[in-house]
Each structure stands twice: as structure tokens, then as C-alpha cells.
Length: 252
Image 1: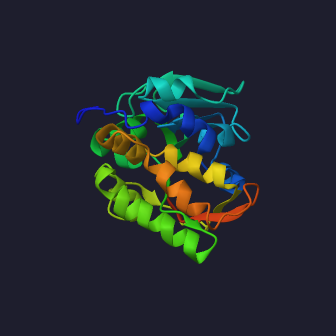
Image 2 (image 1 turned 90 degrees about the vertical axis):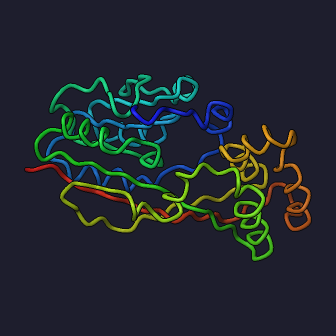
């Protein structure tokens, strides 16, 4: 990619695959229903393959690519999914071969001009492209949520890559040069124990950069405070993320 690839997740790839929230299944069902055929879907910036496995329910084949070798090494295996290490802006996709291109929580990392050229080359006429992101989580319990927000914004704030701002704004400032298709609202939620929540925090790139800079794990300090309110280690709390989605088509 022309602006250079920096792997923000190689040091947390094992935590990433275990501790990231899953996307709602009705999102994939809706996207598949908008496609004229379901031969091939391209999941670009697949990470560990969470979106790819959702697409595999509805498409004959899924090509899942990521520029991070460590992420692909941790990817979820599925007989319909072919994983490849490849930058978004220079994919191995055949011309006019994909019915759908999906970018889940990754569009903000790409060189958009070059990537969109690749999308247009790879999509069938009338094919769809869908990009989504999920922002800052909300945790059940006023005191617990307040601690989580301070941790995200204040303690880790300086360690988030600058592209993270596009996630926080729901991609509204990113170019998306396709014919827009209105999408319904989809809920992204989970019911997690404290251990799962802490694992999610440790999968953040900002956490890894904090540890690299400061030499200690900030999640361990947060855990001490959270345990005052999370009395039972098996207790589950509701977690919600705002989910923003952009959907568009090439010329039909």
C-alpha cells in the first residue's frame, strides 16, 4: 500500500482472535440478500476471519485477505474460506469476480484511492461493497462504565493510532464513492464475564503501545478497580457497541 503498512495488531493477534466481539448474523443475511448472486465474497482486512466466517454461511466461496501475517496465522479455519496475506490495495482477486466486498473494522487503515480502484476492478457489475465499524463500548453498570470510559479516553488516549478517530465518528468523514444503499440498523452486543472484558482490552493496539512505552500492563491496574464492583467472577454484564455501516453498489 502506498502510504505504508504498519501492523498494529501483530503483538496482540492471539488475544484478538479470542477476545473480539462477533458481528450480528442478521447483518450477513441482509447483505447476502442484496446481492444478485452469491458465488464469491471478498473479506478485506479480515484480521482473524470473524466476518469471513459469517459470509461463509451465505456464499459459495470467501476470499479473506489481510496484510498482517500474524493475523492470518490466527485465522478461523472454514472449508469455504481461502485466506491470503495481501494488502488491501493490491489484491489477488480476479477482475469482475466478486459479488460482495466486505471491510469490517478496517477501512480506516487503507489507502482509499488505491483500495477503491481495486474494489471497482474486482467487483462484478452491480456488485456490492459494505464497510462497517464499531466504536467505543458501553458496559452495564454506571460505575463500571465510567471506569471503562476513563480507561479508553484518558489512560489509553495518547496511544490510539490517529486513524482510530474514524471509528469513533462512524466513518462519516471517509470517502465512499459508490451508489449508496440504505441499510437497516444492526445491534452489536455481548454478555461477558470480567475475564472476557479484560481480554478484549488486552486485544487493543493502544494497550500494546502503552505496554511498549511504559513497561507494564494498564489492564492489570484497571482490573483491581473493576473487581470492587464485579464481585462474582462468573457474573456477566451486558456490553454494547455502536455499529456504523456504509453500503454501496457499482453500476448495475
